[in-house]
Image (cartoon, rainbow, N blue to C red):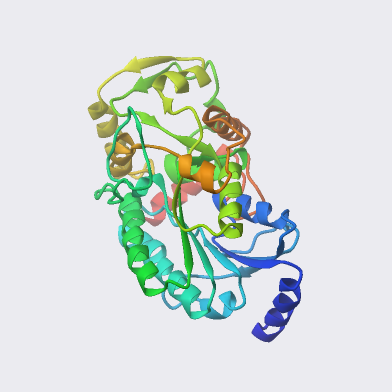
Length: 367
């Protein structure tokens, strides 16, 4: 669609409700946010931006294939006339080449932030993370004032923390933009299972085996206590952040915190106390051999994450998760077993194991 026609269409839509642009609209969080926006009567139109167009067609939503990296699309033109931009785009891989993720996650985000200001968009909602936080306690909760310096060894936490510093300066330079930073816990839903397995565990993990009775034990590691949230519950918070006159950071997490005992109950297994060293060594060896994509540095970061207090979101966004953390992870595990997904490229359902083995062999040969 040409820029002129597109602008005309959006001008008509804006008269009937707000116009919201979602950057990174087809992944785990983006798909839930787009669905929530498309079902909200106060939203007139949604523009979903993604690298590759989906087959999914929610109401009131238009799609545009966009690369946010330097040299990519004219984001100012796409953002002009918007009432809010929700920035969710993030690249987790390749962990072996952090300069590549930096190009998308940091340099791409800088382009999004600058385009919001240049286009005169009044609201920017940015997807930060619990991973932005500095190491913290596991026995009590921290609020949004806890330091956000991340864990410097892991690219994911380093990039999330860097963008927090960028937004600190951005808010001072652009006080006309209402900036909201969402800091959710780990996000799960059934339709994200295939994507998250590919990102963190690799393509060869047999998801059908991740079921009660087949996992004998869950390792109880020092520091293994973290929070989770259903992705759809995070989406309701994003919707509230667009609609309400709030600023600043919001922690988002459901109850209860997850530890080895809770995880073991999901698998009808026992928890096994053990030091983290051997587990990290095994993960590091697998990562170096390209058998798993998740780096041992991210493992280190997870064991150091603080528990978050979500009081501010409950009070100022009138937000309350509809799912417990156990329900969110239970949905995710069910999705792993069924190979669940959606008709978007990031969330595409799993291929059969034979296809995955062939694809993995081809990647080894090309390497």
